Amino acid sequence: MAKLYVEYALSFGVQQFEGLWKIQYLHPYDASLKVEAWVPMTKDDERIGDEIADIVVARPGDKLAEVMGWLYDKITRYPYYWPKEGTYVDKFGYDFEVEINDNNVTSNVEISKIAYDILKEELNIQPPSVIDNPEIELGTQTIPGGGVLIKLLVTLDHSQSVSELNIAPFTKYPMELVSLMYEEDIETYHPLKELVLPEQNTESKNFQQTTESIRFQFPLVIAKRFTIILRQQNAEKNTYLVNAENANKKSLWDAVSKREAEVTLDTTDGMDTVSAEDLNKLSGWDLYLEQIQKYNESLAQWKKDVQTYKQKLAEREQAIADKKVEETRYAKASSEYRAEYNAAVKKYKTQVTQYQENLSAYNAAVTKYEKDLKIYNKYLRDYQDWEKAWT
Image 1 (tube, rainbow, N blue to C red):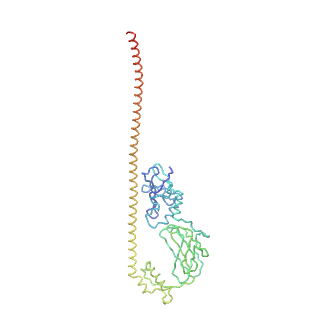
Image 2 (image 1 turned 30 degrees about the horizontal axis):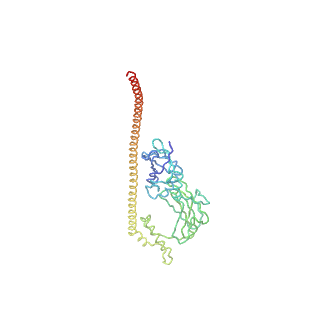
């Protein structure tokens, strides 16, 4: 198992809610090889090491798990890809550290410290605000008496991080927040926890008896459902006549609330509540048509967003395909150049060897010629001496 450094991720994102993240990157030693791995959001995920769709689930590092938590809080729709899709986080270094075996299977993925710091600054991640009183687990829901109490249960679409509560009530008399509790999950058992409310208003909270907005900032928590208890020292009882089939219609409640705000807060019109005649008007055909129009507008916007996503996805896939083509072309050209270079070097070495052989033959011929020339000159001298002796 080797620890390698990756310059950047070709792709890093999640396809569905609570799904595994997938990272794609080029092999540090082979730019033509694309490596893929699933990455869960926690280091103790039981799927780590398993193979899903022929891709192994790798273990995330501490910093990468924290980064995925930041990104998870910013997801508004799926599929989601991180903001550095196909580009660098750290332009002058490496974005990731991976552990990969000889079969190109990734077992661990961690983001580099510099890339972690860059993302933290770009995403504007701030430490949670600190209050003197920590959260406590609430064994029994006991609230001091006095006034009229109301309990609200607010269930979120999914467990998510929350650090602030804002309530803007329609009320004639002051209200106050007396208890704020939350549950991390409602599908399995999780104890109900309470956030302790400071006694005095601060810059981060305002929830004493007031007719204005109730606001409370608290340390970041993961919550699926909130239990909110409000108190009103002075209260009025209003009676509403609602048809059974309309009791759960949100549009009817919104319309009644708007009408109630108009008639209740206007003390000069002599009206105490919404009449049955007004209620029948509110639950009529106009509201239905209004909701249909809103749905059609939302559907049209959704279709437009889908087309934009498909267009961007096609552009991204085309860019990746173009890059792969260029890498293939470069590898082919590099291979051809290397072959031509090797052939030229071989030819040059052959010519050098031939030249050295020819040079050696020439030197041998010159030596033989000089030796034969000496013998010939000696012969001429001997012949001249013989000729002089006999003539």
